[in-house]
Length: 310
Image (cartoon, rainbow, N blue to C red; front, top):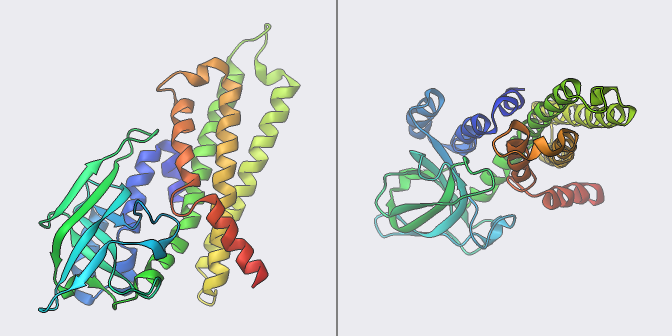
């Protein structure tokens, strides 16, 4: 509900909120007492800005393809070298939850680390997206040294921590999609009520009414699916597979729905929907990323299919 409300008002507000969760969830799951006691209160009160450093140029949906390497040194510390890309909060965050390879096994060779952004050897480079107020960029790591105490959990636990983080937050991406779609629908309703066309508001035309009904029904269906996924995740006895499947369904349907609803709302605006800086034009740009980050729609379909064929 909170992500839906934030994204209704501003997708950027929603982004800044959710990054605090994405960039701290691994610490909640497996962090040491010292990490939890020091880091989590500062994330909660905004003194620390979090970042999830997961995606790489050659490893987006395929986490097993992560190449950033954390090499164990003789004194027990780690030397980290590699590159991350499409990292939200790059250049703003004070701390990163960073995933790097500590072993050769594709899945059991990943580990997670809590990395202060000011560490020597960390460089960020900004990127520009369609939603150009989204803070995002590259994170380049050259000879970064971290003590063993910076590791989150055990060596080799990184894949399970990353997947658990994504499963937990995927339904909330669906919630953000619901919020954006709801704002687009409200903007369209207000527009067709106040505009005059052929001497009457477009809201009086049957074609307009039919389209609004379709958009509203899709929105309600997505909201209920997101709510069901959230309830499943909150059940103590829910299996990881069930939670993952419900999360994938919620993200898939809600984000695809939001794209259709925002597009339909812009169509109802006519030419005024294309004016740069208008609410509907900004939503049209902002909504597109939802079908990609935290697992593309195609990845969600594969997760769902595997659960059906298991």
